[in-house]
Length: 170
Image 1 (cartoon, helix red, strand yellow):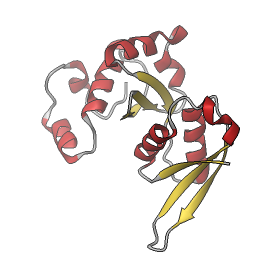
Image 2 (cartoon, one colour):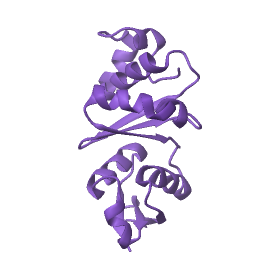
Image 3 (tube, rainbow, N blue to C red):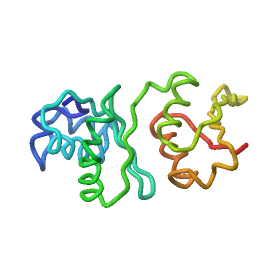
């Protein structure tokens, strides 16, 4: 399993090696990343899966995995997700991670996160100071079908992409 912490740290419960401890201190990884990585390792063992990061907002935990790894992490009949929900005490969603460099990447991430709601489009809003944000467009009639409150989904998407993301209903 590929994770943001080393294999030795995946197998131990209480401590991190100096290199991973430094990553934690520098903010490269979070306590949640460490916890989820260890839980996934216990569930999946040494399978070919890439765990990238975990993001939490409200009672939702989003696990970002590598390309094609979602079915493995979810497990047969959602078995692994059920275990994670029980361990974390929160709702869990698993999405495929992208670099989030393009509008298409943001749209794919939003589509995976907002399922079953369809993402109508993504706009880039440029600010006078040179920075920019993303507006994710969702049809107003589908607002009630969102899997979570819009503020929580905005927070999760912003944390995953590292850029400000807003949901706009059209």
